[in-house]
Every structure is written in structure tokens, then in C-alpha cells.
Image 1 (cartoon, one colour):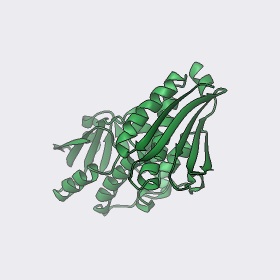
Image 2 (image 1 turned 90 degrees about the vertical axis):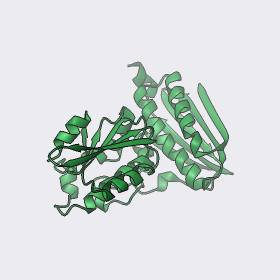
Image 3 (image 1 turned 180 degrees about the vertical axis):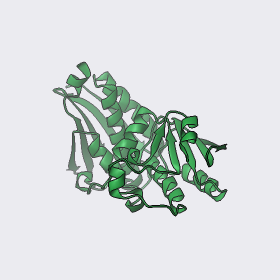
Image 4 (image 1 turned 30 degrees about the vertical axis):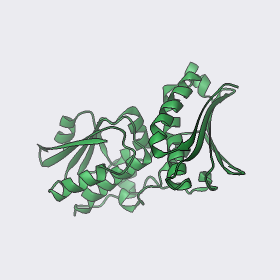
Length: 143
Length: 129
């Protein structure tokens, strides 16, 4: 299995740009398409932002992003040491409501779901693991 | 993020906010939009041509600008049906040239359903009635 990993022991919001750059390059290096790279960057950025702002409450904390190829799928595994939070249990917003009737925000988890084929959560002993799956990404890039 | 602003005169007075840099927070966009609003702006063009990346926090900023202008409008309120069918577009807020990534963020959130997106500032200015 091919994979590329970045780990920040003391990740902060200012590191998000580096993480996005790593993720985009990793997806392309492993054979994914520009579109899949763009989708994964958007989705994973939302999750990491949540971890840094809410999980760590703005304090520096460890974040690991591993991009891996499993068969023809691309998977991004995000691990952190924040208190347990399962985004897959968050209710989806109604994006057909007028903005007047929508609460501000609440789109991060929606983007994670919409831009991936599967979003999997697993609690860890000391943190969280979130897996973003793009099915058939390598076959799609070769087509 | 840097924001440059100026006024254009079309069918109505228009304020252009030209953004440069990633749109990943509510500030400074919302503060600049509120300042423009306090200065009389009721129609705004957001030029996103130099915005490589938009996150959900950036979308929240656009939402805030939309609401700012909408709250000053006494016209008919949009409905879920008119938005879903594409019949409603904001008459007061127009977007220009979002990046591929930015367009994906906007469409994923459904914002492209009620915000006109133009290829140039001139086209956006000309679209105000």
C-alpha cells in the first residue's frame, strides 16, 4: 500500500495552508486527479479546522494526515488527540432553505460528506480518527 | 487577506470589494462589508478572482454580507421553492470569477443557487438593475 503522511505535533490554524498544500500534492503524487485533490483538500481542511478551533480550543495539538491508496480508492486518514467528536452524527443542513432561514455556519461537515464517497469515524483511546474515502479515484484519474 | 474597494456606477451605485488571498475566515471581509454598508453601499460585487481557496468560514462571511444587504431590502423575500428552481438570485450581491476550488465550495453549500456568478467585474456591474 502506498501512502504519504504529514504530522504536526503542535498544529495551529496557521499550519492549515501547509496541510492543504501537502494534501493536494500527496493526492496527485499517488495518482489521483485534480478534481479529487480539490475535493479532498476542501473536505479535510474543514475537519482539521474543527479539530484546531473546537477540539483543541485554539491551542496547539497533534494532527496527522495520511493519504493512502487502497486498491483503486484514495483514503485520507486524519488522526488527532482532541476530545471525542463524531462528525458523521451531525445532522445535514437543508441547503435549499433561503439564507435568511439558515443558521450561519454548519457547512463544514456538510462539505466533508458531499465531497467524499464515504466518511468514516473511529474513536481512539486518546483522540479521533476520521477517514475520507474517494472510491475508484485512481481508475478515474487514469481514464 | 487584502481587500481593495471602490465604487462603480451602473444602473445603481455599486461597491466593489476585490479580495486577494484565501477566504478562510469571516474577517476581514465582514468588517469591510459592514463599513461599506455604513457608508451607504447597498449593492456589492465580491471579486474573487484572486481568491485561491474558500472554506466554510469563508462561506459564512459571504452569508453575512448577503444578510447585511438583504436586511436593508424591503422587497419580496425569496422562498425555498424560488431558490431551488433557480428563479431567485440576490439583486444586491454578485460574485466574480471564483476559482475552481471556490466554485466547488459555493456549489457544495448551495450558494450558487441564489448568487449570480460573473466572469468579470464589468459584467457583474452591468447585471444590476
